[in-house]
Image (cartoon, rainbow, N blue to C red; front, side, top):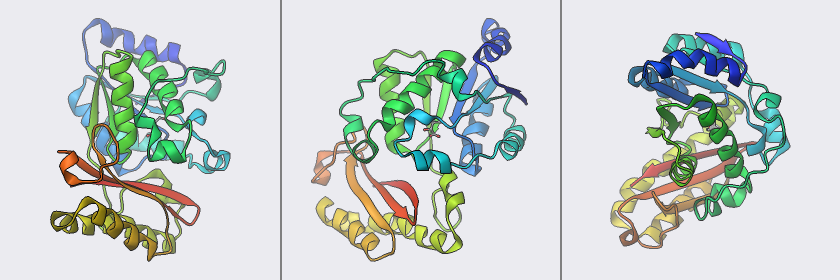
Length: 278
Ligand code: PAF
């Protein structure tokens, strides 16, 4: 596993793969890698001749500077995990490398970016698209891998790729959870022991909502999850039942064949998201 710092050096490394028609997998990350990332990387290694994992904390997708400053940075441990997973290259660019000049591009993601995360984190998905488009341009991968925990991000990236004609297959990978149900996230590292216990209420509420949803209306299911979370020390930002493709909220189950419940809640200072398919 080699660490590469510049786009030019990365492209030189990948030139041979490209000439020989070897498939290239890209796993974009912001580091602080965990078992969830490992599942994406292992899948890319299994499905492609070469795998590039980018490790870059992208400033343009943070709308809260404190969140950017607090984002965990664990490069040595990340490289050990990449090695163990069989990745070929860690692409670890600097901010100046990725943004030599400010990126003023605005992506048309409407209406996917107008709900849920888009409402509470204005500009977040535009920043995600800025960096993902730069990574796709740099790596020109055959496939790119993203986790379903960031359900809305995955939909936004699929939209980016189809609207702007990127010749890449986007592969969505299932959420990886700890044994007790907590969805793996780099942000979990910031939870105290007590907060981690509270954070479990998020996945527990989602799991409980599945049997509830089978015998209740969408509106009742939404209230059910909201009241479960409101009875805990967590601060609920939103719980929405949406169509899994358009991400638009549904009022009745009949409105979609692909209902998904998406949640965001604060556990102390740490903002967590999760989702469930019904
Ligand atoms: O999901 C993430 O870690 C980030 O949003 C991504 C896709 C690596 C872009 O910075």
